[in-house]
Image (tube, rainbow, N blue to C red; front, side, top):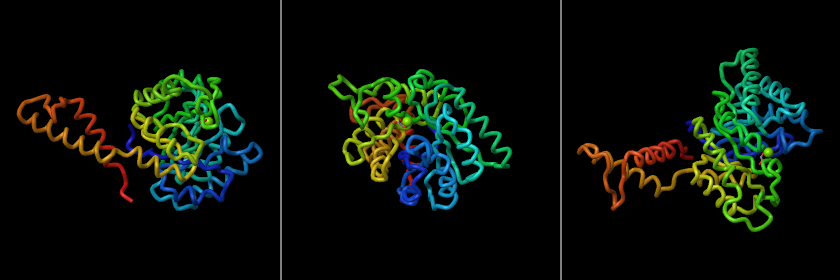
Length: 302
Ligand code: GLV
Ligand code: MG
């Protein structure tokens, strides 16, 4: 797990300057200006300088600044990267690569960034996040997750994944009929495990129905329980929910502190396991507790 907070990643179309200031001030851990699927083909090139200006000139506070470029199978991808990095330089933190299919895709972006950073004399290293939203990308998720030291997170993209898998889902990526169990569990769990093997974060899919805040919160909680560190937000109103859900609860923190204290007390007496309220606590519980406390320590107090 990387040390950077990724509870909420807010999408904003790079074509629409009117949305930029609100996005920058939404309180998200990361905002990405999208050059990909939220931007019409005719607007792609004109959107690049808009993104650069926003990255350079807006007040972003503690929010990480990202751009989602077009996929490697388009004619825009390399110019997206070159124009945005050349224009924004250190005002850009992360590039999000959509529709990754193989480790080579990530490697190609890494090489291009390395050349650009050297050419521009940049000391800052641009970070990467990639979307797993193609069936081939899911099959190769472990290799993709390990493909570059720049990589901080895999993102599960349920929308394009529905297309790639041939799933019959509604506009909110919910199966159109009764389905036993969690329709997306296999893909979600596989993305998470691949990220964890590589020691990076997993970020959950967008939830298009932004008026359904209860549904967003329910999905966010489920992914958080699995181990996801955050979720996309496609509307500023989803940001506060994600920030809340992906922070440890007071109950989790209290349990973590109690278990660590009891274990340390036992350890001082030569014990490797202790009972806390009739429940066994051993070294695995301490690791769980320490991970919870480390997550809590990173949450900024506004
Ligand atoms: C995100 O890009 C998705 O396709 O869900
Ligand atoms: Mg997508």
